[in-house]
View 1 (cartoon, one colour):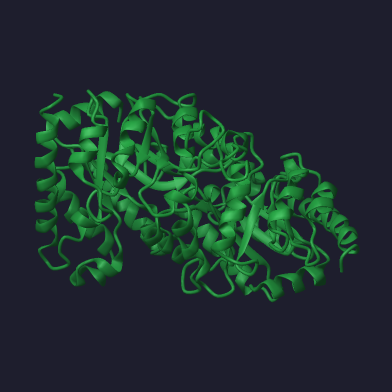
View 2 (cartoon, rainbow over the protein chains, first blue to last red):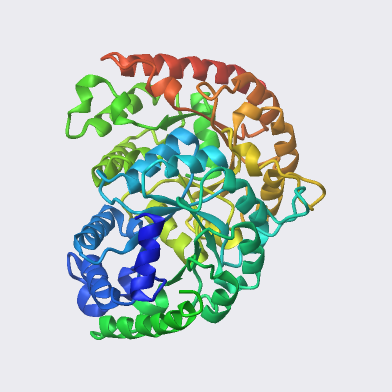
Amino acid sequence: MTRQQLIETIRRKQSFLCVGLDTDIRKMPQHLQNEEDGIFLFNKAIIDATLPYAVAYKPNLAFYEAAGIKGLVQLKKTMDYLHSLEDKAFTIADAKRGDIGNTSQQYAKAFLDPEGDFNFDSMTIAPYMGEDSVTPFTVYDGKWVILLALTSNKGAFDFQFLKTEYDDRNLFEHVLKKSQQWGTPDNMMYVVGATKANMLTTVRDIVPDSFLLVPGVGAQGGSLSEVCRYGLNSDCGLLVNSSRGIIYASNGTDFAQRAAEEAAKLQQQMADELRRIF
Amino acid sequence: MTRQQLIETIRRKQSFLCVGLDTDIRKMPQHLQNEEDGIFLFNKAIIDATLPYAVAYKPNLAFYEAAGIKGLVQLKKTMDYLHSLEDKAFTIADAKRGDIGNTSQQYAKAFLDPEGDFNFDSMTIAPYMGEDSVTPFTVYDGKWVILLALTSNKGAFDFQFLKTEYDDRNLFEHVLKKSQQWGTPDNMMYVVGATKANMLTTVRDIVPDSFLLVPGVGAQGGSLSEVCRYGLNSDCGLLVNSSRGIIYASNGTDFAQRAAEEAAKLQQQMADELRRIF
């Protein structure tokens, strides 16, 4: 999906909501836990219920890998289902990969290749190994790198805020600055943790035009209005993710309906915010 | 495999060779490329040929994921085969994962859990997200985190050598130092790229007792004798990886025999080095 198509989708749905499909068998409703295709059936119900309110879906690979090869079959079925829908969503492989150049090429093939099992629009990438670990993900047309800059977890403070020799900037600022040479706002986004919304001003100074994927609204404590105040740009420029707050809103048979309600609430707030710019 | 068992294996085989199973279908001998189980058959032949000379095997996940779900089935068969052998090798999932705490738990389950599809002894982890992204991998008995410190690629110079506010140390030194609080030499190793062997002195100052996984000897340009000069400690403390130099020594029907010859050469050099310490 190109940048223009993504912006069109956001305008049409008046939403920049990303639903995190962190599907954990143990947290699914009881009646799905013993189904052969339980993970897929759960995801399909969540997608059907939330698609009117969401523009993107983000399966976190860890949850599928934890279920072994069977879990990856469930992920493939989920992706096949998303691709089959007329209402196309932006898809994110939350994989946090990154390796030396020839190996990153293999990861890109695994997740982004249109001929591959998954054919995601984008994937999250860790920056530690530098340029040649990142650029192999930018070679597919209409596909995206989403580079980790500032994450929303406690461990973010261990290295991401270290002051570096470059203009006394923090490491995460240097990642944002340096990576401008590796991609453009048409093929590179950044993960920016919402629990530090005030840092979004700093981020926007460095990457005014880039889309930001903001995790951590809801369960991880971020505030949507703060994220919008500091993060919105004239193209929206945000994808705000909610995982647990939506997909585990209920663990009963009403889970999909409750997910739809939570997604609708967020979409309504997002529509209010978008009125400022569109 | 515990540290003591690993050291025993190194003593017994007079080797600290790790064979990187970066198995790329396009580089395998022609006669295996169209076999249903070609990747596994290739790996099995490499393992059978090199096991007398090697103490560890390191499949890089990217190459299996690039072959889709079928590729992961081939990896499972490879791991099942390694587990079935009487001569137990140390196994490394070169996965370079890392995510927020509850998600890293899922990755740990995927690769280290004895009940899971793979049951690796260890896995490589990227440090960017800090403590809670790393510690979930240290909870399984006899299993290891192998944390990226200094990688062997060109992109290593983008961030790993940045001077930080802490004693003017580079980022990779700070990763080594800080992570001492998260594990011990019994459950944490470090990736240290061999193309910068002189940096091993700095590394050994910070982590004198830890095992180091050294990639990049051979194809990536590192020298084994330099690595040993600066990296060996009284328990050996090194696993030196070679991937392409061994597994693609020939792409003809003699590939396994040629792999054995390359592995034997490295083992011979390693035995000479080990005489200094054992």
